[in-house]
Amino acid sequence: MSVKNEPSFRESVDLMFNRAVSLLDLPPGLEEKIRVCNATYTVRFGVRLRGSLQTFTGYRSVHSEHMEPVKGGIRYSMGVNQDEVEALAALMTYKCALVEAPFGGSKGGLCIDPREYEEHELELITRRFAYELAKRDLIHPSQNVPAPDMGTGEREMAWIADQYARMNTTDINAKACVTGKPLNAGGIAGRVEATGRGVQYALQEFFRDARDVEKAGMSGTLDGKAVIVQGLGNVGYHAAKFLVEEDGAKVIGVIERDGAVTNPAGLKIDELHNWILKHGGVKGFPGATYVENGALVLEEECDILIPAALEGVINLTNAAKVKAPLIIEAANGPITAGADDILREKGTVIIPDMYANAGGVTVSYFEWVKNLSHIRFGRMQRRQEEARHQLVVDQLESLSDAMGNAWSPSPDFKQKYLRGAGELELVRSGLDDTMRTAYQSMRELWHEREDVTDLRIAAYLVSIGKVASSYRAKGL
Image (cartoon, rainbow, N blue to C red):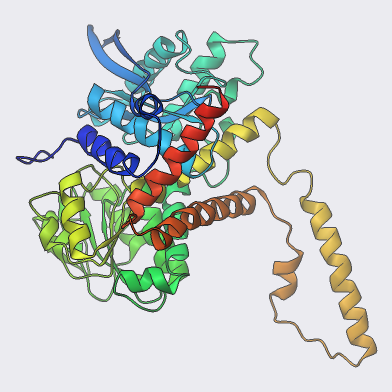
């Protein structure tokens, strides 16, 4: 979305980097090394479809190799261009550093509308794109590891993994060349929900500190908070579902490409999600008010606004009208640099994209580690944990019998206590720990340094500091 005098997404990332780096004491040479994108490869390839040869343009950008492999999604969208891919690669560098995932930043994209092609055609296109990247080591378990992004998912990642394996038949770690794969193709439990789950964990950590909640002019917990979600795709759907089912929040509005639906009493997320899958939009969804100009719902009264789809949806034209005291950026770059200034002056608290949607890359990291170790998490220790817990329960029960049944646990205590952690529980635990630790590093700067006025600057300071430390350790 372009607005007059509005910086582009690339310019927004650069502006925010500049704001943060002015507060750090870095040598000019190192500052420039961190800022610049190392390399961008543009590929144009032909695929024979429907009786003719069609040419496609794709990109893979590597922003920083302070750690390798580099990591970042591949998106399929007609809006893909070099500037966007390079800006997203830079965000990936900072995001990985912030959540301590040991990767540099990368991003890829193919200029294509996936809805215009049949599945077998998409497979031909994806495999050819993967071939072009892999033969240049732009897909490789130890050099460059893609993941799903807008317009791609498990299916495309499985095709890419298979294409790489066909080209590298003796690479025992071939499955680690890409993450976000289906479970039966080397994926990991909890990857599909990961980014939405990360948004939930981020909000939970925010509400654990009364100072943070007070800065947003709110009180209490997530329970009962009114939420508006823009984009009920994979990220928005899971974030909304978990916040409603597990934290007691209510989603009063959902904005989609064909408009929005609202209900002050709360929308039924699963029913709405199924409706969108079946009808292609929210229009006609029963039990809700339909708003044709969905963007207007961004300006409605609510406690938490979750933009979870496109870049630049909150910009100079509407930022002043946004009433939500707390915005969490589930998408990449949903608030432009100009809008960010307006919202900060109003006192709106923004949990930035670099942190808020890092759940995806965090669980991608777990999947990569799983592929390299060639064993699923929990397989070795789960039953041993259960046996050890059983010993404790048996001992308590025998003591209780001797004391005349003095111990009366709740009905589901035994079931919960005895269950050893499987892969999904371990993934969620690792993600929760990662989101808490990263937020706490931002919170510390936000509350303790007078020149750090918002969480976005705090996030950039933490991440740029970590990247700088990595380069220094390399002798640069």
